[in-house]
Length: 164
Image (cartoon, rainbow, N blue to C red):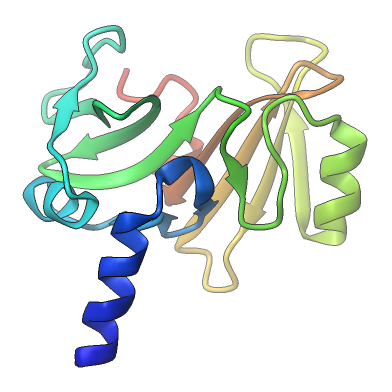
């Protein structure tokens, strides 16, 4: 028990920009967490993102004041995904916004599932799924480079319009 408390404290003290996006979240902010628990783990309040429209009832986006470009989707009071268009954040394997499609292919190899983009005829969704298929990492591209990254629970990680 004591070791897990130390790990959580250390994770919370490392800036999120230095943490990696994983299937389960980023740093101390984990998908599945209640909003209050995620705020406590991050060491600061998660606030509603005013520039990201709320969609279906019970679904909205939040961010930390210290990291407004890193969004968390909340459904029914729980974090269900993390997302960003900010190149400062990397996936667990090191891919970030601005990296080429070929770099993402090199890093993820056969684990990638590539589908056509819903709105950009040149773009793609490059998807990596967890072994148990409960989680996904989605790298959205414009056909040349990664423009958006999102990860979390299925199917939330794959919602193209977020909460809409």
